[in-house]
Amino acid sequence: MKTDTAFFYRYLPVSKRDKNWGLYATTAGETRIAPGTPYPPGGHPKGYAFDWQKGRVLESYALVYISSGRGKFESKPQISMGIEPGHAFLLFPGVWHRYAPSPKTGWHEHWIGFDGEIARRWQQHRFISPKNPVLKIHAEDTLLATFSRIIQSVRTNRPALQQILAGATANLLGLFYSAQQTHLVADEKNANIIETAISRIQNDYACELDITALARELGVSYGWFRKNFSAHSGLSPHQYLLELRLVRARSLLAQTQLPVKQIAAQTGFQDEHYFSRLFRRKLNLTPGEWRNHSRRQKKFPSCTADKKSTR
Image (cartoon, rainbow, N blue to C red; front, side, top):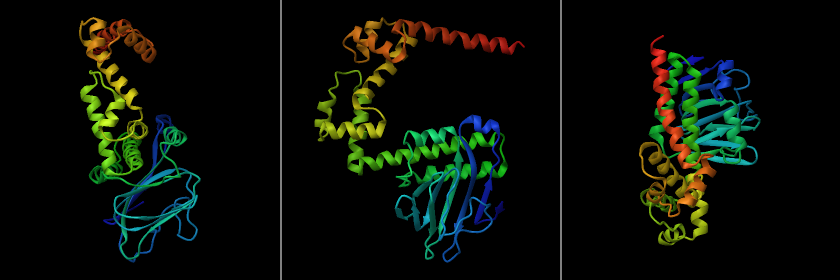
């Protein structure tokens, strides 16, 4: 480990508890590289150190964020990109890569290394991919604040440090994935179309909302709308609408005495029988069973808490 105003890093031990958590950090740090400074700095352990000529292959993942300066990133297969302030790049286990700041500008880099079943699952399901390792994330304040909390937690060695770092890592990867979806929508105008559509659906979910007509109203084809809406939200427009209606229906079932037919109508379902069939298909419970189940759940925690308090 080395610490000063320009350089801080730490490589972290990983326990069985941390592996069982599903996501854990292997290293964290930040470096300010002044213009003309040799890169990378020395002192990193074997397996993490590298030079530009040979590059490097890691056994785990890492997310690197560049907050100032410029440079270059390369990885296989055949990826070579210029790096600017606001860029983040992902490093994948078993994938050769190399990166360095421009001698003219240097850069300020922040990083978190990580691994675990959750990270491997993200890659398996293509939430992250070595084919798309570099993105500009337009959430600089959030990124810098998150990395600042990471460094502070590591410096003070907070209790359950690995679990704190796992949460921060998930937050950073969520921002990376969000930027990836924004990139798929292609530009700010198109992103605004999708955000307008989501706002409209959230406000008018209880009305007779025609999704195809909404696309026309927004000036786009339904095919384009469905594809980009799905990339943005993870659901098709129709499924997004149904999920909103079901969320509201569950709330009304749990919190009111309204008849199922009235709840169906208030949440945009004109056919009570369709509502009940859909509800059961999604939740494996009828609306009435859900109401009874949710009320039992409300009763039991308070009883449990009372028993614990008397011990």
